[in-house]
Amino acid sequence: MTKKIAVINDLSGFGRCSLTAAISVISVMGVQPCPLPTAILSGQTGYPHYYCDSYTDKMPLIRSEWEKMDVHFDGICTGFLADERQVKQIQMFLDSFLKEDTFLLVDPVLGGDGKPHGLFTEGLLEKMRELCRKADIITPNLTELCLLTGADYEELGAVRNIPLLMEVISELARSLLHGRLREVLITGIHYTDENGIPMMGNLDVTANDHTLIPFPCIGGSYSGTGDLFAACIAAGMARGDTVADSVRLAGEFISLALSDSIKEQVPRNDGVNYEKYLSMLAPSETLCNDSDTHISPASLS
Picture (cartoon, helix red, strand yellow):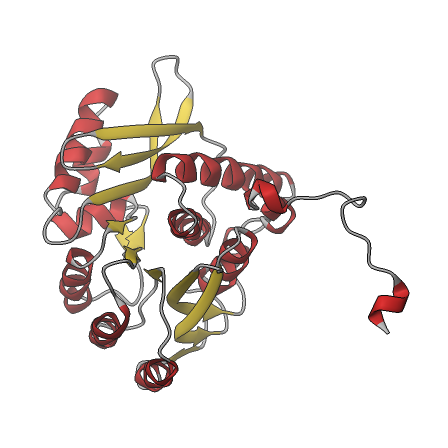
C-alpha cells in the first residue's frame, strides 16, 4: 500500500516552494502527499509584495473531514505557518493523526541569512519551539537554529575552525532534544574546507553523535530549496531510507537544480529549476524503459 504523508504548508503561486515543491518531490519518490494548506499566497514572501490569505480558520474544517474518513498517515510534515494560531491547529491535528507508527518532521520556517522572515513574531517563535518538541526530526537552517536556541548568528559566523564550529552547532542542536525529538538536521551551513573550497554542509545531530554531509557550494540563495530538502527527507523516511542516504540524495538533486538555475540566471525569488531532475528521486524499481511497458491505442478506447 502506498505510504501517505500529511503535508502542512502554504501554497504559493510563484516561488517554487512550499506545497508546490513538496507535492512534486514526495510524489515522484513514490509516496502520496496529502496537502493541508496553511495559507494561499500569490507568491512566496521574498517577493517585494504578495497577497496572503491565511487558512487558519479553514484548517480545522479539513481536519474534521479527514477524521470522518478515518485516514492514517505514515508521516506528517509541517512547514511555513502564517501566524502563531496555526500552531494550535497543528497541535489539534497531531492529537488526531500522530500515532506510534507515524513520524513527525517539522521544518521550523522562521527566517534565513541571519534574519527572521517578515511574518516572524516572538509568539510564533515560542509556539514553534513547542511544536519542535513533538517532532521526531526537525530541519532548521542555521538562522532558525539560532532563533530556536537564542544563539548569536554573527558569533557563529565568526568561528573559522570548522571542527570547532560543528561541535558548537551540534551542542546547540542537542539543547533542543527533549520529549519526542531525537534528531536535528541543520541545513545549508556555509564554510570553507581545509583546501580552501567553499562548501555547503548539512549536519545531522543526535544525542550521542553528529555527522556532517558536505557538498561543494554552488553559490546563490534561492527560494524553496529548504522545502525541497525537507520533502526529500520526509519521503525518504516514509519509504524506509536512512536519513543520511536521504540527505545525500537531496543534496545531489538540489545541487543540480542550483547549477542549472545559476547558469540560466533565474531570479532568486523564482526558485530553482528542479523539475527536470525529479526523476533522479524516483525509487529505482519504478524506473523502466519503453520496452517494459507498452500501451496500445486500442487499450485507450
